[in-house]
Amino acid sequence: MKKATAINRYREHWFRISQMSFHNLVSTTAQYFDLKKWLVKSKKSILHSCWLCEFTKERIPLAPKYMDWEQNCEKCPIQWIPIEIAKTCDGCFCEHPLSPYEKWKDAETQKERQKLAKKISLLPELKK
Image 1: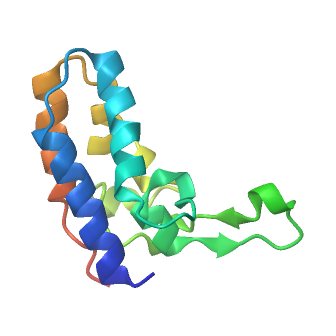
Image 2 (image 1 turned 45 degrees about the vertical axis):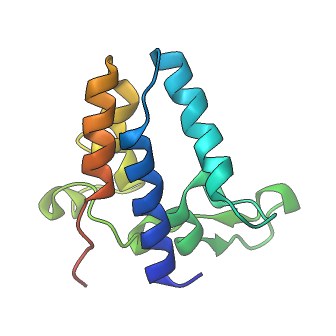
């Protein structure tokens, strides 16, 4: 998958989530995963149901077949958290407590989730 394709699909996915209306937070999560299935047009699975993880995935040597791929967060093309903070931490930047994705998962209202989903869809690309 090319970088531009992954970024475009990621942006489309989160923009669509920002436009959805949800009856409650339980259905929000269910619709979120239904939407991810809808966005996957091929029959192959997308790593962690994330276009950016799919773009950065790498084969793990000697791993069992069911877990032989892993995302490389260092190659994620989106700036999830301020660069100064990203330089001091390891792991998934999208799952950092300051990330809008983590805030989206913890949001308590529909309006808050929609606002954060839109923010996620507009996050800048990293300048490398």
